[in-house]
Amino acid sequence: MIGSENSTPAWLESTTNSVKTYFRGVRTEWGKISWPEKRQVVAETVFVIAIVFVFTVAVYLMDVIFKGLLGLIK
Image 1 (cartoon, rainbow, N blue to C red):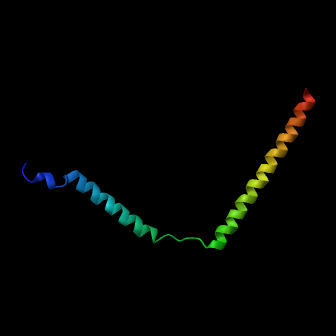
Image 2 (image 1 turned 135 degrees about the vertical axis):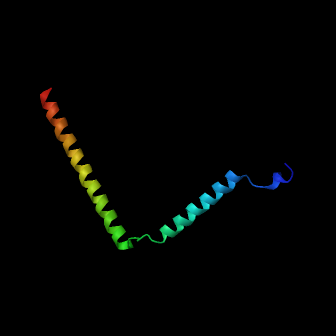
């Protein structure tokens, strides 16, 4: 085939166009996102850290209690 060595294969052109279309859609949707305010993010982060701390202490206390109870059985 003369002159076809410079042309792009159809599957590559189709794939490239599909990727471009996808990222255009991503950019459009990205603009529709309603981002939380900094104050809300900080408050929820502190809340999550507090809950994790409380559960960590609770699991530790259960571990100590069960270890003591099992020590009494032996």
